[in-house]
Image (cartoon, rainbow, N blue to C red; front, side, top):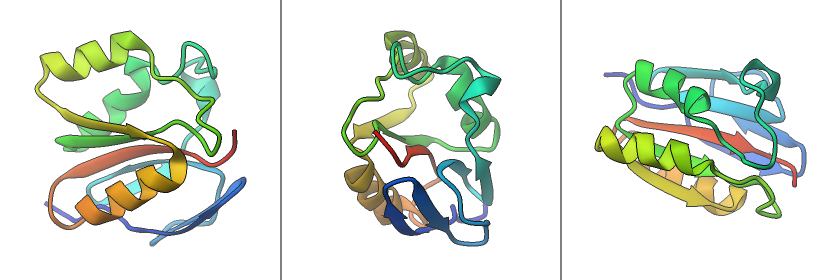
Amino acid sequence: MADSPRILDVSWGKMAVEGLPEGKDFKLWPGGGRPWDWTETGTRHDPGIQPADVAELLDHGATVLVLSRGMDSVLRVDPATVQMLRQRDVEVHVAETTEAVRIYNELAGAVAVGGLFHSTC
């Protein structure tokens, strides 16, 4: 399986990811990633990250997920998402964005890690 792309830099409203154009929010998985468009699943800060948001990461082979809550930890994670991941025995890390990036980059190359990254609030 291909390594997950590393996050090269993150600051308020801006992320640089290995092999991808600069952007604001990202979905990353083993072998690639893309911008994360919240409107695709109706995601909002509350109730937060939906099961549909993480499904694409699992479909691309991620067995460990890192979910960022934003720079000020405003973004929540819907309890239904955590429940679904537990049912599938998926290891999940939830953290403020800069900490989530650190965790993700530590795991990239070692395990099949995927992540959702929000670079503002």
